[in-house]
Image (cartoon, rainbow, N blue to C red):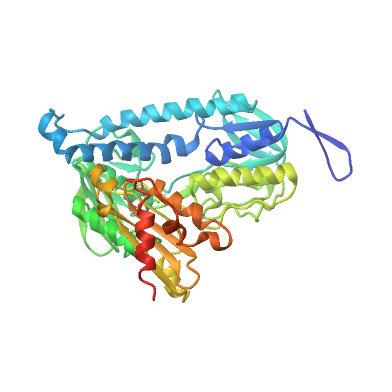
Length: 476
């Protein structure tokens, strides 16, 4: 048992130095950092396997599905295969799910080994607070155990938001978790919510040949993106056959025996075989008994924290989706490590990087880092743009993947890189080349780096040299 002291210097014994609730990216990052720092760590997971929503229902499954569907689309357009090899008539959602299940199983096995190697105590059950140092764990047989620790990290993630007026028990209504249990090929799917999740699933279903309506409550697709990237995605969605319905909100969702009918506030209505509701998420904090430790979540189930990820109860930390923005698996992992660093060292010098890259796994893919043109214009920053079209790159022509572009925003006078936006296959990989230069200090982070270095040829990375030359040629 570890030792701690209270304000009167009386020794207090705890079962563990730290307890981490949740085994998603945030929980894993925190647990590994704490364990490698020499602390005894217990990790509580309510699901039967580790990995959290990221591994089982979110990031990993959707990206594995997207990869499979992207390969099918590529195959359909490859004359070599279409003309010379017999093709299966059609692949269904259930077909591509099999690959997803294999990836999930590999992730679970790999991540389980991390906890074993680092001597973390894995406890499977539902956690709730008894007091600020004590957690009650409800086991599957209904019994309850309690464990104590000096510090506790809440990394319980989030779940799809369910409005009260939609019955998610109806057979044809799904959210982004339950859609993975879809065991038939719908003829027509309506996706309500055109955020990242809705847009990704629209790509997946349309790629499988399903008639797809994407209903957006806003006036533009993924409005946080650079407008040029958003417009490019909208164009390719429409080109693929996705029906985009902007500025629509539902009045009522009616479930029928053969599908759903959406009644919109605009007076319009539409029918589909099934509905995927993908409009928002809620932090998993409602079952934690937060009142026992003087904490209260907001209306979205999120906890308020300070710059060190501490809640108002200072020995209780919160990371990942339960604190809101940026709600990215990559950021959650880093948040977990930073919170653990605070516990280990009692200092809070480590921070998330200023410009966190965004990867959106639609078909085609989008990734960006830094400022958009709209931001720079509003801030009255004198910038210029360098562009490279993928169709002009030898590697892209070899791959037969000519859709996409790279855009570099840079300061006209200092040539400092201000933002990078990429659209097309492997965009989420390509972006990191630019990010690495953008993060450099001083004069090392200018667009001139890309014309002063030598790239492998032919590569997609060569887009940076092309874009840099294009941008510098615009200066006068």
